[in-house]
Length: 401
Image (cartoon, rainbow, N blue to C red; front, side, top):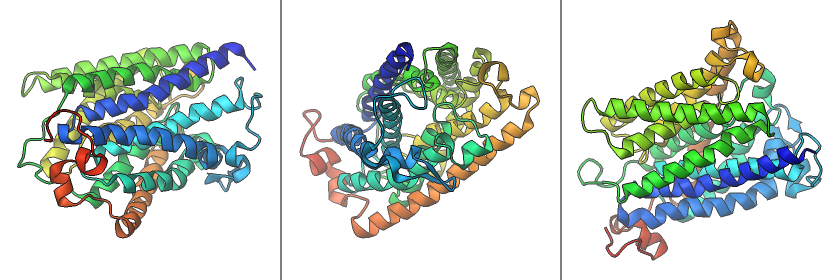
């Protein structure tokens, strides 16, 4: 056990935990004020619920002994044999468990942004239980727990496939089942508090240093490189988004912070494998592909309310592929296509396709079952009144709209 590594991962775990309240503020500021409490509550309740589920069964499904490359065994059920000693890394097993647990928390919270303002809170909580067990646990095992994608050699430093593609594609599946919000395209749906959005984005950017640099699992050079690439990609994407938005209108704060998040998403799988200069390219391209994905989504009327698929899904896909392009052995031990290893890009393509297919189909099945048994969507009157009052009996502000 190394005390320096342990101290850094303790801090990183706290930083990643802070990202879920950051997501709550980021999402909360973008909805109408009659749905602000509901949006905040989704993330905060997920923080509590998944924290318990991870201890009980989530960790063992993701990191238990490999079963056919698909899922972890139940050896660590209820954290059996997961203690204060360091058996696999230079940090206590319990700390590694908790670091991975806050990743699971934020992944579930990210999905909520696509379905705000119309999903039943009770159904969402049941969905979180089923999705963690059936989707997140297996995918995390495939990539990080010694499953088939890890055996293939696919790279994902901090969650491009496990977190962002997984959440984005699953969110899109729920949108297919739920349909659009009442009044979309006919009624104004302006954000209720853009300064809150910026505060949430700032907390995300801050927490992302733990998310990415913490994934080195030590206080070392790899953590330093991930720290630098993380900040660099976010900055590049924010600047490119500002320039893109200048083409048709005045640059907006909402656009700038969305761009920063897109850059953070894209660098996540690559942070420990690429150089800072490559991070500029990854962030810049992320801004472009996510920007045009959002515009396309709006044109076809696909109501991914807060652009979970457009930013996390599309940004995660680009980041995973970019890892296979820009990776360099001098930094992360593996070369990508630009260094002559085309096979690595092929591995990334397989990982992206597999996670997309499994997440989308699995989430459709879970969502359809819940829709038939509990109902996914609130009643029309409840949606008109707003989920703050109809689901939680509270108001964020003095009015109800």
